[in-house]
Length: 264
Image 1 (cartoon, rainbow, N blue to C red):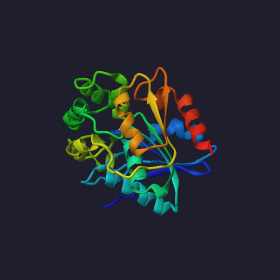
Image 2: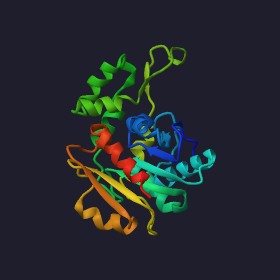
Image 3: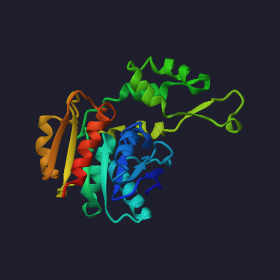
């Protein structure tokens, strides 16, 4: 069963759908949206169980791809280009493999169509382990999160999912904050999100893989599987960036996207 995704539409031109990564929201690719909305109509989506999109018990790539296709139907988009980062890149690949006739061009940022060993355990432990009843400020939450996540930038990213409960909805002695993420389902379904997208029939449209030079998410050993599923794939490496390449080198990232999307 699909869910109606929260979204933000900006710009005019051919449609380009942006899909964020795990624990993210449509704001994460906002810098790229602003750099491309002069030439494309940007559809930034909150994926299920993230941001302001509905919470649901199921969370796997076929279901999440169906959400995107249902969104396209609702918006009257017969075809669109897709840009996805990390988990969003896998969702974008799943859409292309499942409904290739709906995808014009595909951009995949720092992820490969393979299964990965789960490695977000500390983050999930931190998110689920914080007792929000005692949290009275974001600083309180940051201190508690620091026991599980060392990197301040990662904590700042995760804490964007913390929202203040409207005063009229707060219960006496209850929490002042809540997570926008559906943490129980993300935790339960995390193994599925570490898997590869499903599909055996290659997507024969144009595909651009963008890799952070300092990131290990796309490796030489993934080349054969990329070529098998996406025979027209090209790879560009952005120097001096890691997994957050779209934030660390936004101008370079956007320029590569623009060149690829504009090519005949």
